Image 1 (cartoon, one colour):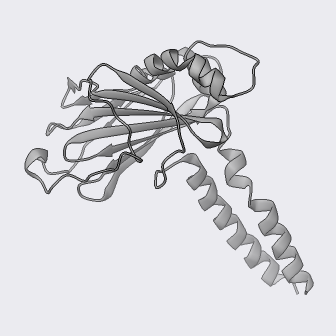
Image 2 (cartoon, rainbow, N blue to C red; image 1 turned 180 degrees about the horizontal axis):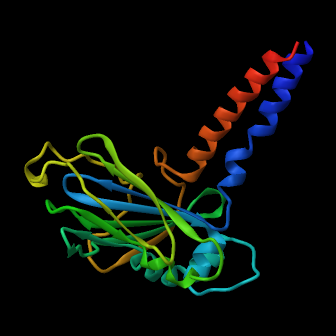
Image 3 (tube, rainbow, N blue to C red; image 1 turned 45 degrees about the horizontal axis):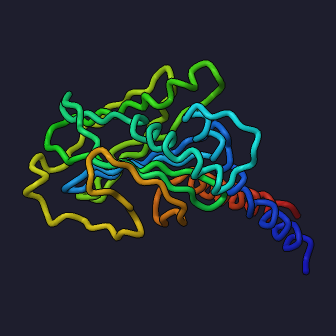
Length: 234
């Protein structure tokens, strides 16, 4: 094996765990809002300790299913108050709340709001307020138009600047648009009650935008740059 190939292999081995390491950032919270014809679904993902802090729980115990279940009522209450969504200035009523403990002890909040034909959409992350002045806590927010298959926008929200509007060009009459995009129970677990919540331990769903994906893209770019530098070396 040539020296160039050895160097390239070393780089790839070093970069493989990069996405996983970055995904464990204590301050990093990732949020994705998906706009369907019949609902607006928001998924929020964070590290276990961050979720407990948001719920007002300070503990030195390592993450575990037992600790998750012991605090699931607090986590459900926290999830239900994390985001407020407005459509055309009207506050949308939260339909359901779900909290899941996934792999690597990441906690996921899943919120469902009713669809609305009014615009703009405004997202306010009031759930970040407990972190104000406690460090660089914030959440990335990606808003996806699942009807027209496009990204409406991306931003980062912080405790001191927790609001962002997105002016959608989605068909104004969502109810009369194409048939709703269905999601399987494995993708979104919701309740039939507008006030009840569900807490569970499950594998996180696939196909969502998470901070790990951004880290992976960055790793690919870094590999491409290093390959180019290596090829320039005689």
